[in-house]
Length: 531
Image 1 (cartoon, helix red, strand yellow):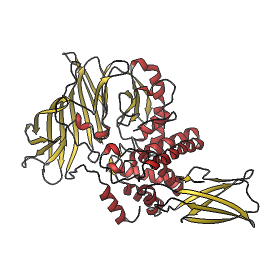
Image 2: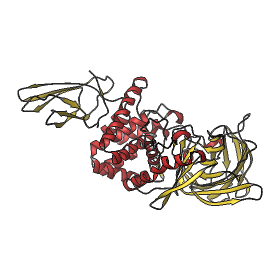
Image 3: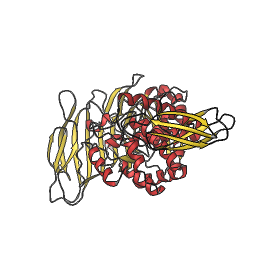
Image 4: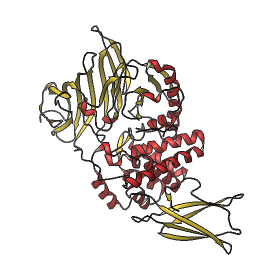
């Protein structure tokens, strides 16, 4: 997901890590003995009111015994929320309580450990499903669930720790076009002026990234990449501009499949939509803000960011909201990697310098680490830390390991956690296993410690030696890092200084005094230079 875009579109020992994991857990109550396997959502939409009628068919597996479990659904209060008319277990009335936006179901102990529950409800969703008009005045319905807004219109476990396959069965007036998570398996015109459209996604997905789009669309097949259909769904008034702007998605998808690993979902639809975000990475059905379409092909970086999420955030998902950098930091940096491949290394440097400046500005007002255990509300985990700084951590890790080991580690991480969930220490463990390096210090200082090195650097030449004085002036922590310097003008040489202390003087043998010294010429270090 991209909160906003610019024109180019923008650990310690195991015991220490375990302690951090416990302290950084978000507050959502998990029930690990219950596994939701599949949702089937029957939704009825209409043109006369904003009331939706829903039926959620929920396929549940119990681990050892049928224990009580909870589903999220925002209850009716005044104008908005849902009223439940029925909850059933295997077709018979279920024992349930609906309060505080939770449906607590107590299973019949005589039932099998795999069971189907059905929840029938109706009401007006306040959030999650955006019922509005497009910028051209057309009535529309768009799912906009991130991070935990699915509960406003879909009865579900509204947290990424428990993923499930999903099927949408949408009944709506037959003048609407419908796109949703999954592959379209049916479109049937009914006798009452409505149309039934069914989409099914077999891969397990989190509720934060399931969606529907219902309005008047123009749609086109942009191409197929490794048998994955790539489509554009745009407002008819933006037909030609939208097909052009979203056309780059095929190239982006191919790059990530070839670099990272298999794509998890049935299709890749790119949808112009009403969304609170610049882009929302819904699994296989990405939503882009309405004005992303103008025919000028200015959103390639945004498209790369959201498609990168299909691997990181959607398939390999954070298990805990405080580790959302595994989603947003990854999407930020992998969009840069795509642009580096297409436009060269100068593009990587340009994007990272912009991001570094944002990180420095943000830190001055918000001195906090990337994984911040003090945050309890998932809507507050998004920041420059989880986007730009998270991306910068990956850039530095790439420098630390080298390109070959970095990519081997990324491939191994995705292979292990595809369609699953991970925490920061899981990613660290994979990168250590692949590289053979101990990365305790690296992850501790860049992920779990606030800030970055604030450096004063001076130099002088004396007796065939270049003396470089590097001082860290921040008070709260002393970082360890490699610092590249480039000396010379006509003939340039680059040296790497291993900075470990508060103040270090490095001696470099040199026959002549250099005319120029440049710090971090290749843009590999997150730091602030102090004069």
